[in-house]
Amino acid sequence: MFEHKSLRIKWIGLTLIIGTIVSILTKRIHYVLRLRADILNPPYPNTYNRQIVTVRSTMFLLVNLIVTCLIFAFFYYKWRKESTDKYSKIGLISSIVALIIQVVNIILFIVAELQIYYHKFPIREGIFIALSVFTILFTLSYIFILLCLWKVIHIMTEESNLSKILGVVLLLFGLTTFLYAMEVIYLQLVISMIGNPIIFSYLFFWGLFVDFYEILAVITGTLMIFSLKKER
Image (cartoon, rainbow, N blue to C red; front, side, top):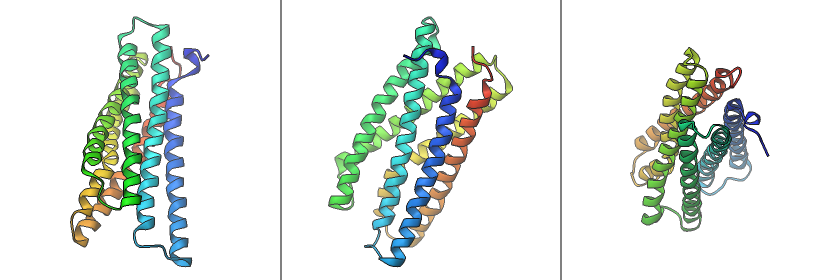
């Protein structure tokens, strides 16, 4: 059984950094395999493009799920140590809700992906609506527990300048997380529209969203590591 001291905030930040780096490497490896297949054995149209979206979304959901589990564990042990701390209690309850929403969202994502691969586009309307709703709920719950974590850091560091910077970065990270999480919805809307300009615009702006998300994820994790040199 872990004690509170064994799960420090820096491990949450480190997990966010490592998870983001692994996600980037996974996407790069898949991209290289796609180019190799295009040269040696051209696939059916859009096969690898679809797989890239699946790999990217899967890594995104997996990394955030692991981070949420660690945040839940942190609040749980902190609450057990300081049961009167209202922020620990709010964070604990919020992380439980966030975990439930994320699990449901992942299940819906898997169902949607199976429909796409076996029944082609588009996703059935009921699944599409449910996935859209839980994607939004997932993002909001994830951002909320990150802000709860920031509040704890802010208090523990006695409102240091570094923790204030972390708060701003977290808000920006939350915005890019929302944009990233909505990829399945964006993709369905783009597919329903005809015209290369729309597709090229989607690819351009989506690439920017992903780049900003990954950069801010690393910055957020780094600030978490260094914001608390010594946790109380």
